[in-house]
Length: 424
Image (cartoon, rainbow, N blue to C red):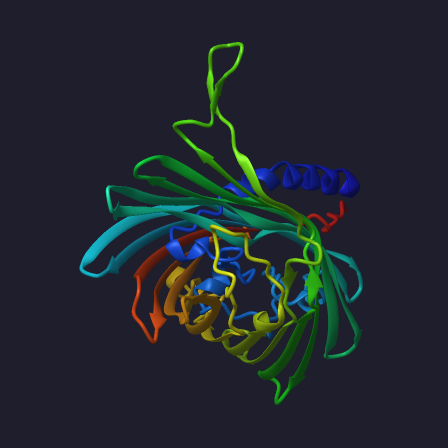
């Protein structure tokens, strides 16, 4: 019976992979750069706490950010966590303003126990997203830009506690997806440029956590994560066409544009992912109050990225990315009235992104607020609601300024699959 449920769960999970890739709807013009806007594998709960999770341990919450946490999964339960996201973006540039709306299915994860002190998790989480549409007038014409797509990770990981307090774990993932960026210039003639990436690759993340008690109710957890630098696998393609001239009519009398290939290269040896290191520390009181501080560093300046003519400057470069996040969660009384059984969360972050726009650094910061609503008595399912505001800008020269209001809804299903009822 257990194996059957595992198979059904996995089939459902894999069936949603493509949907997951399509639902990563960024709404930022900055997502046209590189691989798009990056995700940090944070669940809805973690986004409400500023995106922390490197030092987070909770046997009834799935924490993909540090696979060492899987070792602490509750022995009697099987966890599902599914998140939805709605993103509202207000942008301003040189007195002009705009509004965009995006969102969709964000992630699906599940976690279960394999043996004593050994847990596992599988799921689909976003890696990056691309989504924008803007344009303007040029001499005797117009210039419009649009992009879509994203990369996702289908992962499987294990976490093990070899000795009391020490947990280690790793995630192995299949990185897949595609991005498309289109530039259309209409002047004396109409020319269209298309840059696309199709990624089929692997990735990994290793993690360690060490927990120790200061006293009976006070606990501190230290966490570390590491992902190695690696070459990307896939195809990068650049094409262009004169929309008015490079057309054909097929046998069904349909008009098609014929594109000239500017570049068609293997991503291996031309594109790389950087070394990523994360560190975190958390403090827990009586399993009701949790405070955490995380720092993440990615060495993008050392990662290779080959520009394609007509799309990127030959001088394209990336900055080293670093992010500082802090968050707190509080459960007043797990056996009190309904308001006391709710969990309240608050967090903030500052992110120095990897993107560089004509010598200007891209940065963003934000705050999050969240609530967990427990289901009726006897049911451990929890509905989580989070609201996140963030501001993105460039420095030293101010280009496009963006303000986001993200609303996340996630459902944490806690099923007691491993509980055996005894008949007396």
